[in-house]
Length: 413
Image (cartoon, rainbow, N blue to C red; front, side, top):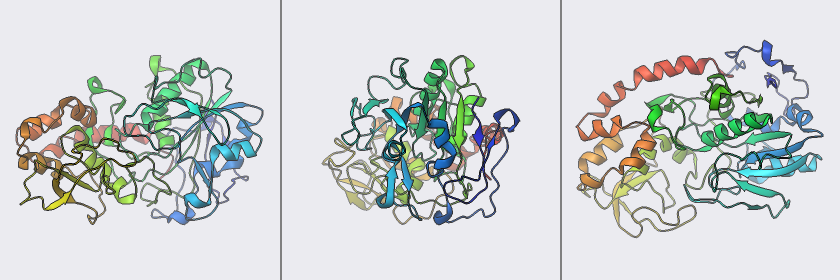
């Protein structure tokens, strides 16, 4: 098994750091962090620690799973205008990149949610782009032919129904079958500061949630990869040959402003913070801001009473939402752009919207809502009149159990 790299150095390249052998590196070891509220300006993402993973790629035929978020930054705080995409950076360093694999929304990150993405070719490099959100979501063995190693570098947001962790799982499983090692370049989780929400029930596993974890699980994508391996979540309990290149100077309470949209409908920090709570509306008739420039910062519907929901907007097709819910219809709802920073899932908005709706019969799109919630229990409780406090109490036992599992795979503090 390839090593998990752990370092406490502060140099961007990390050339003074050393590898820790996997068989001597305990699963619950953590990177020591001196300050739990570190500023953006000192956080070093895995992709920037080039000296640590470049030796693993030399003289290898490399595949990269990435999208528009796979950036190597040239300044702090991070911004996309002063950054190089990892594909371009590796090619410039004479690494033989053979293929690009793209997740939901595509390599450039401009596809609609759930939209099938076609294979293609990168016009800049001429490299083939293989979609993992089109004909197949798991790389085929043929698609892995000719590759010696895979690099996975995607910015995640730490929410179960955000599909990049499902893509990660499929990639790990396919490479385990093929015997191809995987390097995960870790990035901050902007929702790592809490753990909350219903835990997925195994019978409701889907691409919107493959594993029995809470909605918000408080781990980086590198830590999550370790958990997938360690908990035997791959087919036949296979093990992927995994290396994680960790972050430096980051903790679970660090606030990190994402330098680029991780997907079309998460345009800013506020939308990312509200996403775990407003994402529930994706499985209902309520519009959560798609078709506006306020995606996941507002919600509304023609079926909410305007005396209680005074904010109005009309969804129209736009970037990342070609056919938004309630297209062309005036929606009554709430503007949440000035809401305080959330440190838990806010269930009140969902419960109150259902209770106020004048179209309760059609409020839940049952299959879609169950896949987002990961359980049938939440819809049932809301329909039966449970308060949000009563519902949240039912989450705690599963969350505490998950925390014990999670602890084995944490890298940071």
